[in-house]
Image: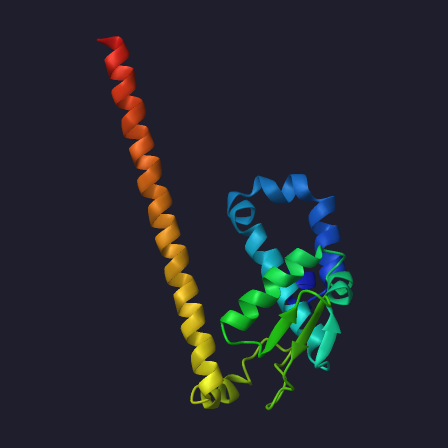
Length: 169
């Protein structure tokens, strides 16, 4: 499983995960992080698949990602666009990703971050700044949603406790 993950072999990774799900899911740490692992490997494979294209079908990307759904592909792409990793747009009507040609070296597959100097140079790019701002706003929005959810949940517990106390007395 680890080797398949490190080699970005998504079909093998998911096959091993499915075949050994009972044993793998017994490990609490793995169980808590399996969705993150899937998202990470899918994102890595997605970046490799779209690298040579400026326009590619979402269905083709989904097929390369072991036949995941197009909405899942869109979700992965949106995250890449919002965090500034991908410069492009999703055309939902046509069902395609339209991306700008990459200006720098492609990310390496050896696990090192040889493109980090490229990313640092991109920080002054106005489009990158906008993408980072949107990513920050998305993170803030998600944090606010979580906070609102926690407050609502706490209030519901208080109401339930008050109701139960009222019934007992």
